[in-house]
Length: 219
Image (cartoon, rainbow, N blue to C red; front, side, top):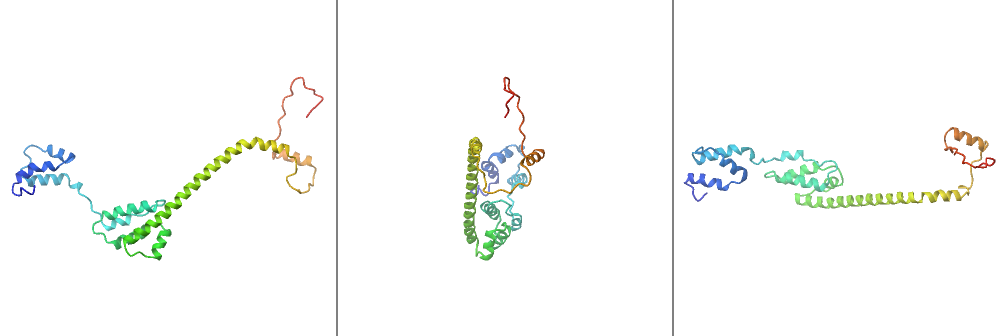
């Protein structure tokens, strides 16, 4: 269009060739003979799409960028970098100042306080090291938790399979568990009666006597 600087009528004809999708549909729906000059077309277009202009953020928007609890360092750094890229002429010192205050307290912030960085490149390099450490620790925690869960399931399954054998082995082994016991001060029968009354041990339910049983004998 710059080749035809003086012919504004031709500009009006060429302008729709630069539009796509939504704007082109808007242009085709303009009333017939509603555009008297390229200035009119410019005014109508700007009025229609004024809200679509890109909103340029300022350095004050960094105050709202904080590392959330549980958010990884890598995810936060990516989010912080995107906000910084949307700010025009952002001074690196301002970005560094906001970044240190936005990170959750931890080893990385302690490292930045003890050894201040000189520029953003050094800060990103150091942050990358702590990201790798953080991800390494998280990987081992997840691996250990998964291994523990598998072992727990195996032990549970093994315990269910071996439970009958343990009962049989207990029945067969009548040896004392300990070498010495506290001497009793009352009869065993009285202890048993009190334990049954306090429901400390389960009571056996009597079963029905089968037919043709010798009632002169009992167990």
